[in-house]
Picture 1 (tube, rainbow, N blue to C red):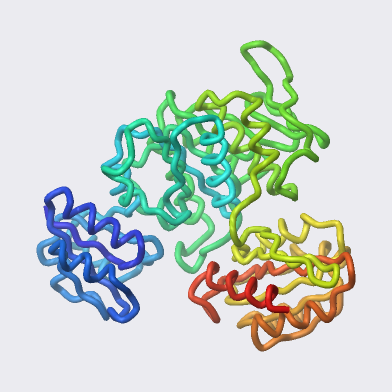
Picture 2 (picture 1 turned 30 degrees about the vertical axis):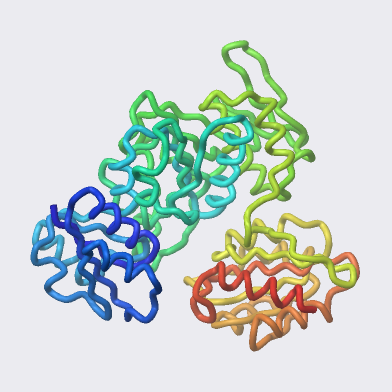
Length: 445
């Protein structure tokens, strides 16, 4: 079998390595120059992988039996269009990795926001309960990198982005979680409808034996139920027939076998702040319960889980102001969740590369609780112009300058919140790089 792998990121390298380890031939093609990459190139060369950089030449498809696409390679890419015209099957790395991990139980999590936190939280609950579990997928470790390296009983908890799900054919998780769906990545998918269809792929191959967990309070998410054959459970801020809900003071996890309305825990006992993290916690609870984790273990884990890097991550306190890194907030909806998570006055650092951003959804939160906005990046003027009549606004030429301005502007008891509401690619390699720069700047005050 001859595989052509498009894209030389983590997923592409992992897919190429897996292909040759299984006795196949692999051709890796990448539009960026080879100087962008490190020792992985030497490793693949030693394994006999053919590679090209700086563009996709005709040799990439000449002998290909199947094309494996890395996440983020747009469907309009000429090399993909040509593969489809030639009738060559095109699948994503997520699909390829799962095909070679058929025996492992799989929980897959998608949604516009909260995927990484929920993925890490589910893995944490399972491990705290003594089960073998590994977080993978969009959270950082490609599924292809796990094949042949974990035991068959290890539960894979996979974060699945719309990019990854867009190229799935047979992908079937034992439990699928859809947290929320709001407009995002529209320049890639072309429309909100196409974005939703990519998300819905998470359940299309599920059977009646599988579990689908949906947010009943999100219309686009709840609509997924009509497309699925899986048993469906819901999470909500209102009572639900099957699933879990929050009544304002407690998380209620009914036990239908015992016909009881069981209180899992108090809302205030959740370690992670904010209503969005209540949804994430409820989703994690349902997923863990599907793998026979006891309520006591779920409760203890939800009380102790400290969160993930770059998502409402406490960095330090400086002159009585808490500096919080929420660099993973790459869209307006994620910033809404962050701004709604704090009762203290907020100095909000925002900006980056927009994606047809509509900031009006944040107006009420800004009027009520934002002391000052420090705008950066390509969206700097758009953010400044939109909010300048609502609250004090400033501009900064760099993230480091924005942190300094926030420190000078904030009062004791405030929160200096870096929640960009934008993509990172105008100034940084990715949101992780952006978050590290923020943390270094805050720690250097």
